[in-house]
Image 1 (cartoon, rainbow, N blue to C red):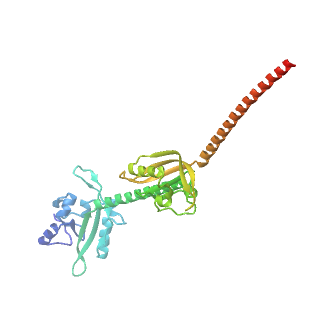
Image 2 (cartoon, helix red, strand yellow; image 1 turned 90 degrees about the horizontal axis):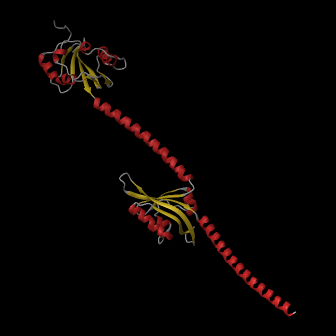
Image 3 (cartoon, one colour; image 1 turned 135 degrees about the vertical axis):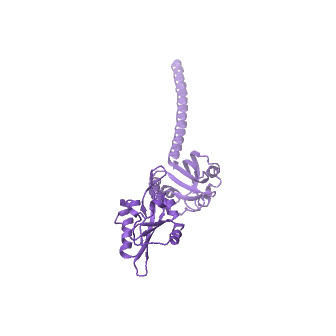
Length: 327
């Protein structure tokens, strides 16, 4: 026996709703299903005969997601019936079974629109829902990706600060040169203090800051590292440097490493310079070596003098013996 309800639609109007290209249900004000669009049947996997003249919550039993006072289906329909105005639901999760009967995660964007008669009373309600699962999951993944990137950026920032502190505190001279002109990108405080006190060199090519090295092997070594990517290691290398522009050069001695810097595509973009100034050590050793040579020469002179004294002593002794014989 057909369900009695307060709304009726002519067959022509029903067919119009059934052919709409979006998922629609047409409900009576008592919430009986008058018809469903073909798109809705395809979306839910239902047959039209399963829906017609059935109460909405008999076909789709109430669940927390449907009945919650914070925005469920039942709540939305109650708002429409009470106010005679459309009501838009927030995006709601309602899982549906697949062809094997396993529930699949689904999210729906749902709205209810009342159709009023000339007296302003509800004739029927248009239930429109749209599967926005892909959008919701994409936004969720995007948020997760953004949070992951933020966390990675925070870790990278922390690591960068730790590296800066390390570079500031390590007792070595560190510089980073970028590009074929080897432009100063970074110097640590010790490098600036010992080479360029009071001078601004960041952003300048190396030869502009230190033209005195143009004819030295270290310049050739830096260029080779940038061109080939092969690390260069130098020990006790003498580099004449000027402490101020136009001043005389002073010999400095370094143990250093020049290492290529590469980007994510493994292209060489710059050179890292890491070196220790061992000038005092080398000069002290040279002074020691010179002192040793002088002591050796002095010892040789003393030995030669001792030999002469020994010969003279022997001659005196021989003369004394002859004198004794004569006496």
